[in-house]
Length: 473
Image (cartoon, rainbow, N blue to C red; front, side, top):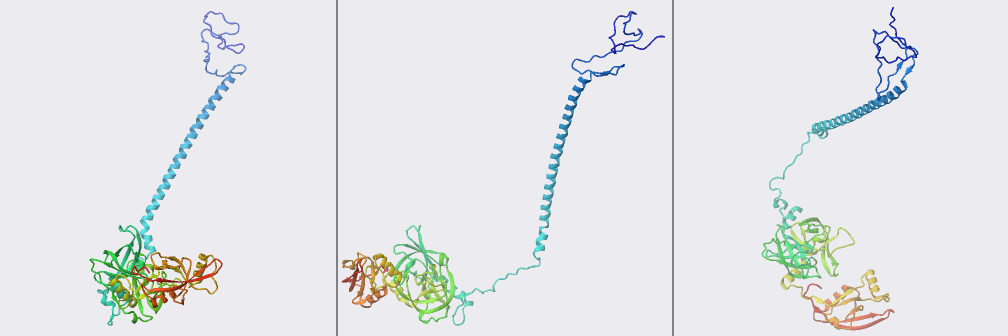
């Protein structure tokens, strides 16, 4: 009986031999009719696959195989982890953009819905049943005849309409090119051919003046005459067809009578303010030269731009020329206008002569002793206190073109008396001279010099009054 088993010794099968003889190895026997099993040799760069010995089950080659396999497993795990991480990142990005698109879609949808429903919301907030009614005045309601009664007395709007075209706005420039505006004021038309009354302080003696009428026309104006003492001046425009104002009689004005003031305060053309006559016969001094004028007191607002404008009664008549120079700086709600009866002869003389006759110049500027502040100013200039019971007017400057400059009077001295009558204020000086003297007359005056030690040296001078045609004094 042939034995088909393979016997091995030492546990390792020897390689097959090409010898076909019947000789056998002392360690093994393989029948000739059976082919020896092939033993695969591992490649040099590949790990040898472990096998178990058939007899001892001893593992062969596991150390090398385990080392190579662990590296491959780690690399494979890293590749899988990287792929998984990449996939997660892509999912996160995709989810972010999906959420962003959803949020945008929701926002747009909300806006569209709000816009579509806005009309409903507004309808809910404001009642759709509200109706606004508007109507016009009846035909002819603004006609002037509807604002005057059978006695010719206007309402406020009627009086304003009646005088509106007779009030003009005056622009004063310092140069011929009208590049430098110095101020604005008002004026009252006196005649169709262009005579206009205004205030002297509105004008510049050597300036340039434009007149703006209510219908928007502009005319060049020239000064006909001016008087700084009364603050009355007359100008004229040529080639104009103006509507003259109607002058009233200020002696007929009653306290409590309703009036309006029309002018151009702050450049606001044809501004109308209303009020009443608060008092008559107020003797008000100009704040520029101390000259006193007979004025109407009113509570109608009178601002600087009103200067030269009109105070008008309810018959559309001008009863006063408003002037911001005649004001009360200590109280509010007090306005004054030069009575038209006092202004009228000045206007007529300015138109006739270009100046007020009988005006004189002494040729001095002065500080009087009419208030404690003025006395303090005098003592500051002297550098010492005034002697007790001393009175006079302090001579600040002397005009070299006047005769008084040829006397012994010096700047810093005092005039204490005129022809023996004591004086201490501007009014004392002016009233005393004007009561007895005129232009060209010689006036005797007592003067005084006060020393630093308070001593007083008196002396007497005589000076000639100079005629004034400039309107400045």
